[in-house]
Amino acid sequence: MSVFCIVDDKHVPLYRVVWVAATPHFCGSDSCQREGCYEVRLEQGEVVWASHKERDQLLEALEDWAGGAGPADEEEDESWH
Ligand SMILES: [Zn+2]
View 1 (cartoon, rainbow, N blue to C red):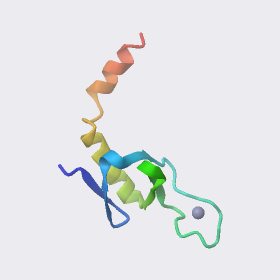
View 2 (cartoon, rainbow, N blue to C red):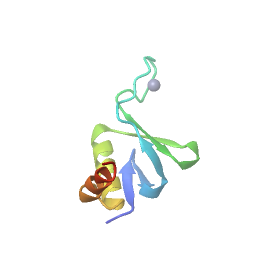
View 3 (tube, rainbow, N blue to C red):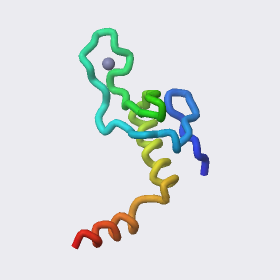
View 4 (spheres, helix red, strand yellow):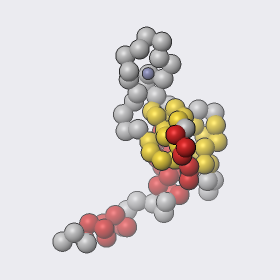
């Protein structure tokens, strides 16, 4: 699979993503162009803005890239008991 995911017409390397917003952006500004978009923070304080669909694709790509969610998570839970 590709190490890139397209966000806002840019090929964003997955390893540069620091975090992805869980809720759409809202700041109340009339001139805001990013309302309803999801903030994606990259290294060095850079930000790209993802549509809902792009955000879902990005999260999926990040999970695959990181080895996938699932059994590994369950094992982690076990260690707490
Ligand atoms: Zn805004």
